[in-house]
Length: 487
Image 1 (cartoon, rainbow, N blue to C red):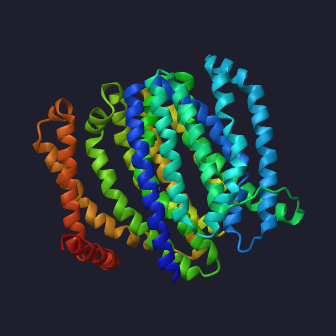
Image 2 (image 1 turned 180 degrees about the vertical axis):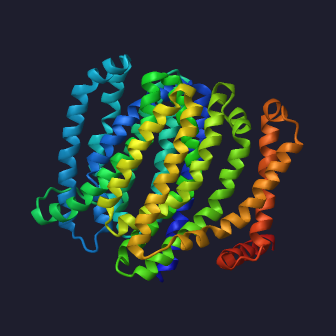
Image 3 (image 1 turned 45 degrees about the vertical axis):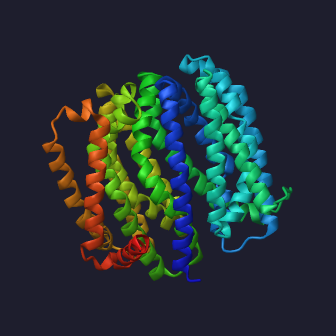
């Protein structure tokens, strides 16, 4: 099977898995949002700022190194497992000890127990990281996707049941842990991997060198994403964190589902052809083109329906997150470029250079959050947009240098999406102007569904019948599929 077909088939499975997972998560999230209050989610988000950061340190990036490396053996997997287990035990011990000080700093006693219980996931991580890396390396993304779906659904059901009997934030914590244990069981059952201990200096040096750069980038990226939540939590309270995080997570959802699905398979494919710059360049810009075509309409639709969507799905108590959501959809468009650029930089082992870009972006996010703080979560969302644009340009520039790409190539890659989505934006603008201004508030469900159905129909027609050379293969595939369905 050709590399292109492997990418398409595996991406389809990852996309299907991510989409199914996100649908389940979305439904569960709506149910939990209806049962719980923003403060419960705010407490969880604050916890995740720190446990998420430590999570990247726990893996040491060596799981990613196992996937990126051209050659590995069974001993390498044992070496990585041993190193990760030692790191994770140290992390949990430290987390257990410092949790009271964390509670004192935020003046929230519950954080002590929340940290100690949620931190148990660190003990499980090495046991799931290695079998997952084995499956990724073998491009067994179908199996990974199915495991993710089952584990997520199991954890979500537990969270909902606990929320219904007034467990509050603990419903979220315990549900997450049970999902992790379910995933662990399924991974072991699928790979038949038996944990083993080993020490080999050359393995640690080879895999650890790449791993340290990878994990450091992930840590900086995580801190950059969470810095607004941290500052809001410290200054505006848990309720405002819950509202802002809702907007931020929803704005990232389309690119995570489509772009994130593509990243895994494209990264592995690019790693296998590191020295073939022409093929790497083609895959890079082709990926941007396809991600933008399938993701841009979702962001344009979300931009126009943000308030109605929040009211219709989450209820009145979440309406304050609608304006930040509308603003952050613009940043979501840029993620369609950032994700493939990150795959190129990781495959080409440019993580050291990317680290400097991540640090620059982190500092800009801190400054932007402080600038926007006097205007609340709306001001913060608006202040972050220039930072996203700067980060995108820097990531593209690094990727271009490594594979001899140009900004003109980027514009050509985005051209099909722009041709299709500019008319879509105008159509939705016209519909919004025709509908009475108060209708989106008084009848949010009807407004949202009417915009989605009309916008979706317009985009399907544009996609299928505007002649675009760059999309001919995609258009022909969908036309053939639709004709088959009709028959």
